[in-house]
Image (cartoon, rainbow, N blue to C red; front, side, top):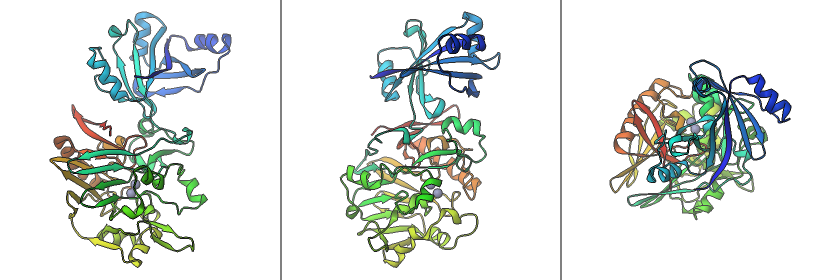
Length: 427
Ligand SMILES: [Zn+2]
Ligand SMILES: [Zn+2]
């Protein structure tokens, strides 16, 4: 495994005395402190080249850092190594009999995933492994290829990417207080969190794409409002998957919000709107179509007729009424909640199951039942649908695709002691 020194944690008893040394005597710069509420710790990072020192100050007597300092006095507390693939790293260590504090990686600060190695296996040092989230994709100079391929029985599933956008954190997390959601999804200076957009290709009897991202019809003001990052977009993703828009037979909509249906149409050289996938039938649930074409004040901001009206005009629109099979192995299932006729897509082949969760569980963080976007029209319907979806996904080991997760395309939902979490699936 490749590991890079991320930071060295130092437990501090008297912060001002510590600052007198690290900041004043050594002349190092100290960043604004970060509060880790769950650990009752305040962390002061001190950049030193590529790595950092982390001065850890307890904010309550029951804090682990307070207990550590009481027992051993201030000093070196842990070393954090950054790895690219924490699941593989933990598996490798466990296969060699290394004693882990965390047998499974778990969520850490700033959307990272972490796991601690027991000091008894690390020669007296507490080692933390950390896989950072792509919390700030614009900081990445070359956005990575975002294609992930999975085989499900006879079907091939390819998760694509249409880049990233940003939405208000309050919109995305509803009743969850910011100190809690901002750990899973750090907010920018405009309180926005970064979301991916991950259309899914299903290749079997026919080639289908489920949802198609934001598309390119927004103007500069729109792109600024939503922090649109299109350096890696659906055109590039399709090319990386060796597909062209002409290869798509079916476009299936989970719902018609602009971040899912924006890529359904394009403007041609003459400025006319036309279907982006020239050979495809576009399949939309009738109730969703009715809502999108008769908006009200509570949902109007999410629907833009340019994304779907041209489909009807071009004669490529097919409306379906119920939970029907779209092609062999692929069935839609209405959840409601987010929009009245929002649907997820259930995929089955060779005894294996996958699901496209759309905005029922937009990111891994939303797997927790009460984490429901304020945007949802009927949150109690979302709650009921999510509970049923989660129970089924846990029981049947469903490979779940997360449309908006900024860093993970798909994973398995696991349950320990009533808590649900997502184990990322590697393609
Ligand atoms: Zn939506
Ligand atoms: Zn969405």
